[in-house]
Length: 347
Image (cartoon, rainbow, N blue to C red; front, side, top):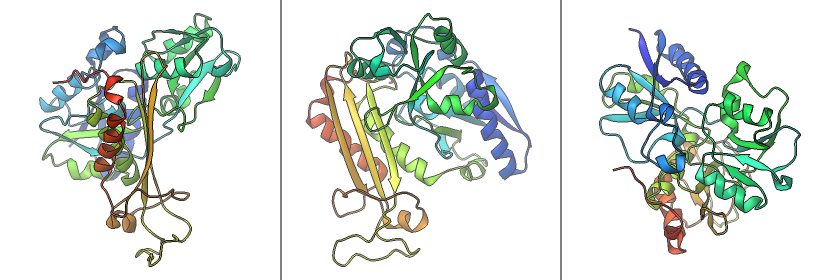
């Protein structure tokens, strides 16, 4: 009756998978053990820009799940290709952690004031750094969190850019050790679709599908579905220079529209989904952005809701998260985004 949870071997992957394993054990009443698996991305040291969106961090894990080597997988959602994997289903997206990027430096110099070198392997982050501060030199960077931070600590680089969620999930193993952290706001620095989120994947039809679903967070799933729909519609890979962040909110003041009614749970008006998306040229000299807010279906508003208010809603009819993401992507494409996004290399 033991549940075997497949995970990449890195310290971060093991830490976040153990957190999911603990929750899964609590809801299932069964022992959950980790099964470390080596992905292509763990052994191929090529640049992420070269590897593109081929699922280099997920393909080997998915093969292991389909072969019965494990019963469930935990992925960093931003590493998953947007195309569905035949025979598999994402049964849960647990509550999202901090979706922001952070800049790590020795002395706390803000990114806008740096004149040295910044390390990152992400084409999106490269473009954002070039746009934010054209004076700095960007160095290609791969490796685990410790090795990246070591490049700053040893003065090989003046800064590196990492995901805040990764640092948070390391918990007691936090490797910062006196280095300085500068969080980057999501409004002007949107991150990878799904960043800060995990995906818990099982075989389609598995008896674990319902058990794992207990870990799902509806707000997180709605937001990341919209973000991944934007990327899918742009036909961009996981490493495309696209930043997207979506969030679900609930209005806290009565809507001004005549005839607006109060929902079954006492909330006023519908939940809304806000999507901010920016497509960058690789050198950061061009960007095309969209910021849209959509009304969510009534059933969602009655069942879920937390937030600090809503912006003006696009259209009167409720819309699904994926459809909202496709709509944002269409607007970006209409404005020329196709010229900036490399085509997805996943078959």
